[in-house]
Image 1 (cartoon, helix red, strand yellow):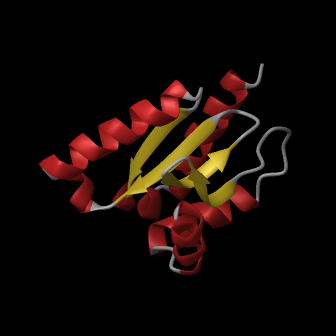
Image 2 (cartoon, helix red, strand yellow; image 1 turned 90 degrees about the horizontal axis):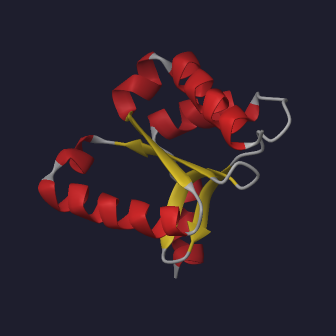
Length: 114
């Protein structure tokens, strides 16, 4: 089920996800291989770097609503129990400051792969 959703999501990236994907693809450093729309258990992570056990989520406004906050927390708990760290960024931050978001992600990758 998650695999099917992931395939659909890969074809329907949001503008913010596409912007971040382009920034992540341009990285040519050790341990920075990211995949997009990655099934992990019952969830689909927006971006995952397995070498660093890092997941990056790009969230729209709906993630500020109570029911999404609760489900995002449950999702993060599931992923963190499997050794991943979850970084979340809001769509406007990614769209307006893609380079800064990529730099933040790079710092986390470096910290997790030492």
